Length: 85
Image (cartoon, rainbow, N blue to C red; front, top):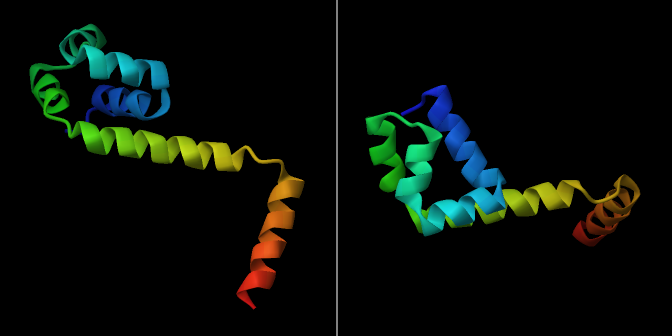
């Protein structure tokens, strides 16, 4: 299951909180509106929702961590390096 359309659907679930919430409330409607093939629709309905939420939260955390100002990141990195010694 790796059509570009299905991959874009998954990426949007991982990255777009509003879309993810909408999918969790009304998966059948969202899946049909996205225009997935019948096989892709079946895969989307069968998706592990707990795993999906966990992955989306993890990606969000990683995005937020990258948003930290570089000088703060450098100071934190230096601090952590000193702790490791």
